[in-house]
Image (cartoon, rainbow, N blue to C red):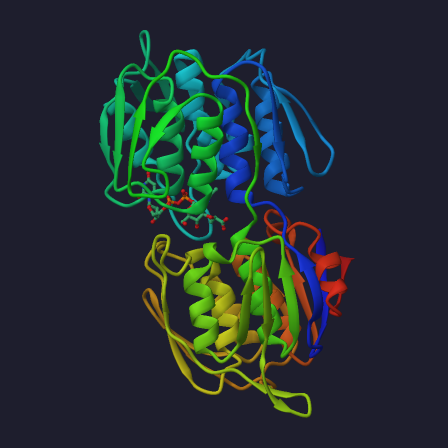
Length: 426
Ligand code: EPZ
């Protein structure tokens, strides 16, 4: 296994281009199962999760070619309809093949994803939604066994919580269902808008993009896709926070500032200077002159989009650990998303948690000291990178396979911003 070594205390400066969004690439790859043919997806990030998803697609009979940017997928021959536990346990987003397989083949057998570090991660909303579309579903031996006699039937589906992949799964299935499907309390994340654009480009009839109510008129068939993946707002947010945390100044390009309304607001509240310009954001920490800088405090409460993203909660906690005041962080989406707290404390952070609330007493921009820490999940690991970049001395982060799931060329991108960071064998 590899670990990441960081010599901290260096302000990040320069220019960085954001990659395509992991959480758009995964559902859009799944959507190519909906119809035979050759599909082209552009701006696909090269990540552990996208490679895992392509292994799953291969196991279903799909062939593909990826050049580091464009992904060509041929889903003409779809031989199987089972997503095995071996693949699904490493990436719960594999559940996204359920909807397309049911729409295309009328049957699917997908392993239940099992929990992960941040929570139990059930898929009951997905299952209830498919049952509303007349799918017969049996849960046995850790698998979802789903099939339908004839064609999927459109229905009215109301999510208790606006589930992102739940919305994506039902949306994909509904494009080929008989009649009309209405999804109420749908999630509104930009990645869903990207999927809507792709499906409409394939011939789907969908109204309500970017709203909490999607209406889909089922069609007989779809044509192959040609679509571009949107920029990764969580990657962009992670680097914006890292620049602030190290007292640096940088331009983040190839991103979409309108996808980060809540984070930009909170960074401004914390005193960062931010200019938005089309597809780039210029950010600088609030300097006190002579290389000194300070970070103010801001409270956050994670909410479904466009509220503050849960996927940027851990990163913001690292930033608030460096502030000159106290901040309160509430996690409302997942039940166990404070795994980074114990690790941040090892670097000197002063954080008290009580259930889903963390109170962070900033120790100032020079208050963290490097130490060995362990990554527990994707976004917690990026929080440790940020803290390590800001801490003085050396930080060693073990289990960095978590990081590689969602951050493309992380060492290159940080090194290009002046960070002293490299990988070593554990
Ligand atoms: C998506 O996960 C993202 N993953 C997550 O990003 C992200 O944190 C999450 O949305 C919330 O924004 C992908 O898009 C691949 P949910 P998803 O269904 O769809 C509960 C990352 O770091 N729920 O929106 O699995 C659930 O437990 C990952 O890139 C049910 O109870 O999340 C949670 O409390 C981590 N039953 C809430 O809803 C269900 O059937 C929202 O979950 C489904 C969800």
